[in-house]
Length: 171
Image (cartoon, rainbow, N blue to C red):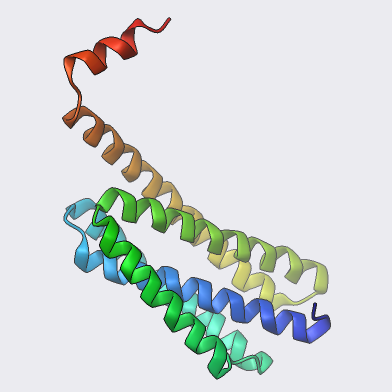
């Protein structure tokens, strides 16, 4: 495992790739979503997530940690796999669940950057972490509210008399 600046570079590279996947998901889902609430959620957070991506990429460049051709190819391959998985799901509910998971991954990375920045005396890393964590937390709260609403709506649409009865019989 790398140490020192090489470790920092690799972690920033990973964060850039992971966050880019989340941003691309939002952009794709804004156009794919049938639910206007989901489209709106994506549209409202895309500009903020683009700013995060810019901060990460700028820091990446400052560190001299630009992705190599191999990692870029891997990133593209992961993107193709993600697109195929999304196409197979074709459900706003499942897409949103996936976006929440991806956002939480970014939020955890930003938390780590914030705390590491504090411990290392690296104000830029700390600032990137603070901003990213806060905005991803805001996204997750709104996305979780929406996914809960969608869950209830989908469950109600499929309820039958027997299903309702079996859930009410349990003490």
